[in-house]
Length: 589
Image (tube, rainbow, N blue to C red):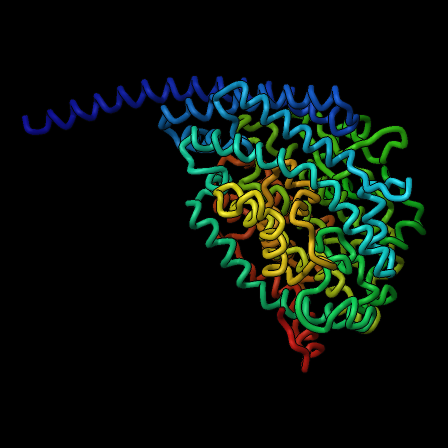
């Protein structure tokens, strides 16, 4: 008799679980179906808006996003009623809560206003131009000035000119933040900052601590690179333009945001004869945008992955049109959640674009790998994974790879070539790390109220100095909104993913090189044409978001923790070299 109550109680629990599982199953089936349908509508509307920037396309994209925002928020709110009886159901419910970047307010009028403002911000960025003396220049033109000019006044003018386009964005940005904070609170978060930080299979506090831990592991190397580059800039421009100590003037870094220093490699002593001058190789071989893209596709195919659908080349934008404004910022698109994948990119024939197209196809192959998953699982293990895949492939763009594809006659490297190559890579990869970290740290403080409206720009430059060790050429206007000059800010794209990707790509690269059986320095490894490495990578890509990211990470690396030691291993010869070069210098800022 004493056993009956537990048995009856267990049966009751079982019946409840079955009933709940059935209703949860139905709810998730409906959510996947409805959200999938709306995602396709949004993707089509945004594709047109990005490629044909007009008042009408902006409105159409805004309306599509408003409908999707309402639907996504409604499903997120409903999901709080369900618990799920299987790991798959629990996972989908968790992902449903964080499905949107901008949670919409339940109030339809506020939702419409938010999406309209966001569309206007994106259009303002895409059509932004700096006009002076009856001459207007877009971002690409201004970036070319920063990359190529060595005249301080020209650099300062181009740098400040692009910053002017974001000043009108400031009040609209603030209103979008206000509306999104309302949406986040309705979902049970304190503000948009906690909502963004909640998407990483750990608590918001733990996530921020994890980023700080990883940064502390790589910061000493960044400081050595910063010290060396500052010394070389001082030799080039003198004390008045480029002081020997303190933060470096940002307009001198060869990039609009100082996130990559690759364009000043000539100043810092990278010898193109000893390093890899891929730009010259591409032009000599008469590459065009299609051949650049096809070469990148062939890399993935060499790993055992499928060829791209024919529609990819029919529907992608690979060249900047002459007759209209487009958003040239490179992006990869999954239009129908199946096979209609596309690239939108104004390809130029140079090394940066060659690497970028390999990166963008990393997104495309991720889309194709998880296309048979439920809609809620059609994403990366975390958003950093999505960015890391193409970057991992980029690390295989070595001398051996360039020889294999016929761009380089011999992979035999001249003396000191390793240092020149690693220095050039560090100007891209290591220079980026503090920028990748601070963008969201800055926005989180806007979202949670720590940075008030009148301090947007002051707080921005405080963070730029703290993390990057850079400063503006002269004090910035109080009403400026310099953060808005970076695409991801007005478009509300979370940025921690890029910092995470810069950690993961080296971790993935080391693990895949081990799988490929490579013996030698990590920076010389290319997994091109290695099916064993490709099979392991494809297996992880097919998982999509179906498992927490530590499990996906373990498929490739065998470990469940992010690890920055692979970066230090990859750049070890350069770090030793930099320390020697920096002897006697006052490093830090």
